[in-house]
Length: 169
Length: 451
Ligand SMILES: Cc1cc2nc3c(=O)[nH]c(=O)nc-3n(C[C@H](O)[C@H](O)[C@H](O)COP(=O)(O)O)c2cc1C
Ligand code: SF4
Ligand code: FES
Image 1: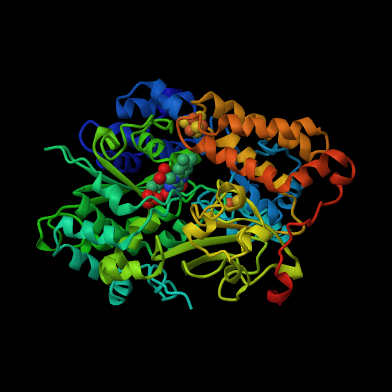
Image 2: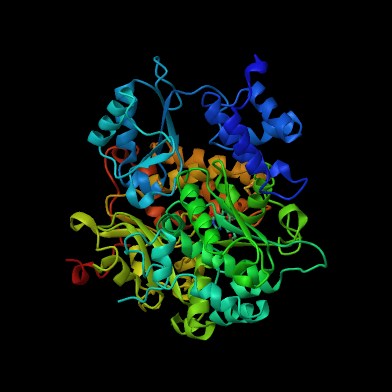
């Protein structure tokens, strides 16, 4: 299996450009940016073979990659749905009704926090403050924020996902 | 009308792009600064009285003067764009809409500090913003303001954007540097301070996005003129990100002479509380600063109006005052539960503790569990005392200030709203269907100011 884990040529070029941002010998600094790229290219999560591959690119030990990958919440250590709905629920969002949004998604998709729908399309991930407190309630989907949410807006987002008609990056 | 320095051109169509920004006088400050010596620029920043906008309020010029300059060792500027403190979203606004202001500030600051390689460390969730910043960097480079031999002065500078990956603790400057080195975001024990041993062991200055952006108007106006704006040691302007129960949430630039009352109720800023509700409480400087009830927010304990500046917000210390912090202004109306709000903050800190120190790792989880118990109507009076005890044991006993940041909101909530905590205990059923509402701490001047 691990033989298949190789970045596309364009991605490798991008990776090398990132490594060149740091002085000689400091290539480990590229780890987090490259993990972002790897997660995107290899199915939305970081398997052990993927992390080993990243370690080999940076000439560091696999454990150095595992300990970093497991520290940061944006890295998924197990498979997730195609659309990960990350709904902020910290104070300012809570005050503006984030719990209503979360409950609506839980019921509509019939999943609990952290779960993925059976069709593999949606994962619900409650999140902590995403820096959109003035535009609450909000959720993050892929690269983008969806803000000032209402139940209707959430329904619309879910419909667009089902049609494959929403921008993820 | 408040004086605008950072956001003065924010409304101009296309200000995100170099040509438009330049036409408004953008990059004039770089031209001016690069004709001065680095020490002269440093003097201007010192004279300006600028205080760090990331939360701690430490004088920026003084911080820069601590930078070690050992022979032959490169130095670095790292901009802290991790912005993860609940209630805070001002740096995002700056970077998203006026990216060149940050780049311009970084060029001047890097020149002053002697950094030829500077980084912007941005929280990973702001994943569309690096594109905007990188485009601005490209434009600046094409126009000779970045790269080799800038404006023929012999000064070289490269700026790169580094994304984090979801960890509030990486906003703490030494955790940020660890993360930028490709490691877990575990704060370092200080000393040594980053000014001596920072990124890759080299002398490093870490500054907030807004602090670095403020260097541009300081150079344009001169430090002395900048210092005339504001009051006392609160010089210049401050970005406030306002949220919660207000009519007009958003990012505002204030000069620090306006009152809190004006900020909340005037149409120029928050526009009052929706639906004719009354003000209950406010966390004026991001989730880590003490929550204060309305009566202590609008007036100090001496009955003086409270102003939106470092000194006035802190007046009375933690007993009756609060802090300017990062300027994340969270407003709660009479329908909100302070217990529930504090619970979400406790969950946040428990989630974000890096786990290195026992008091923080265990204490944050403990506070969260006790609060959950009280909020769900299962708490006892002894739980309230225990909560107080736990927060006291965290404060001051940890490697980095996240421990304090987790303890203070809980301490302030109990200090000012103990009656509400007790009401949950005494009314296990009622508290599950009804809110405590307002008590003696209601806004004292609401009737005269609210429309
Ligand atoms: C837990 C924690 C989180 C922090 N988060 C941020 C942040 O997101 N942005 C920021 O600029 N400073 C943050 N700080 C403060 C930084 O450690 C540092 O003081 C600041 O970046 C210095 O810049 P300034 O002097 O320009 O404010 C945080 C501090 C702590 C303890
Ligand atoms: S106080 Fe908390 S976040 Fe800071 S180093 Fe200790 S455990 Fe980590
Ligand atoms: S509290 Fe939800 S984005 Fe800040």
